[in-house]
Image 1: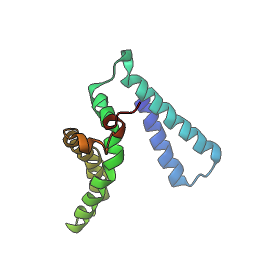
Image 2: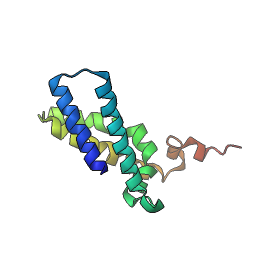
Image 3: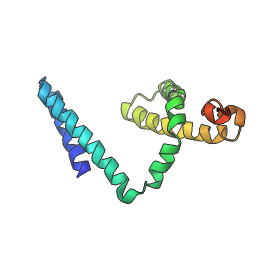
Image 4: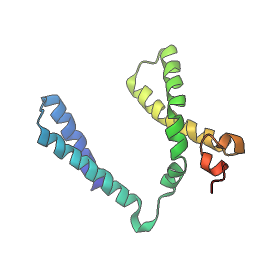
Length: 129
């Protein structure tokens, strides 16, 4: 059901964009369907009170990904342009992949040093009262 609502949102959004409809209520209803889809997906992920292992790993590295995604994605785009790859799909797919994988690998390395870990989790390094 959540995927069906998400697909409906996607298809209707494309249709609204192509036809040039600019009515506020339609945008509101599309936004509402997108939010419902996300909420239903999250409900499925936490079914039976258990978080899936994949989302557990992603949750653990949320802060490093938030802080470092641009440090990995921007240089990748530059390299792709330099070697002549102009395809937007390749840029998006590789950009999303490196935006997650790069910071996660960096975080694993950073966690091995107490001093480097300060830059990700300062409260963990500095003992606060």
